[in-house]
Length: 124
Image 1: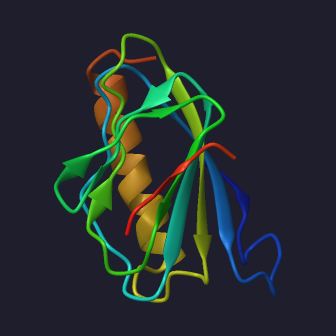
Image 2: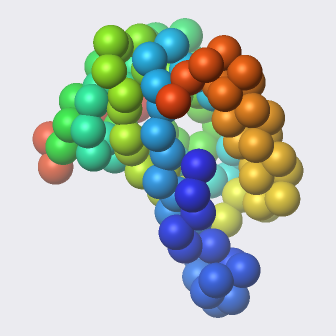
């Protein structure tokens, strides 16, 4: 994960934007945000996020809008790499940025140990 916009870079920003690349089989941890909306926007490949137990298929150029309070995670169940952006607003006060960074470091570490190199969806 590469943070593009956060309070460290832009102290008064109300959001975070990150670029993420998942190799085939990669997935993040299930989590939710009490007050934060999250959006996944797929740049290449295909993302298969799960929200509240329902699996979605999000292709290149599509997005998935996840309202606050919905348990979710992103996953790549395809055969190729998936690049996507994740946008969170307002800043996730219930998930401090430092903890998010540490979680992604662990996810990236696990992937490397395994040898891994506006047409959208809205969740009601």
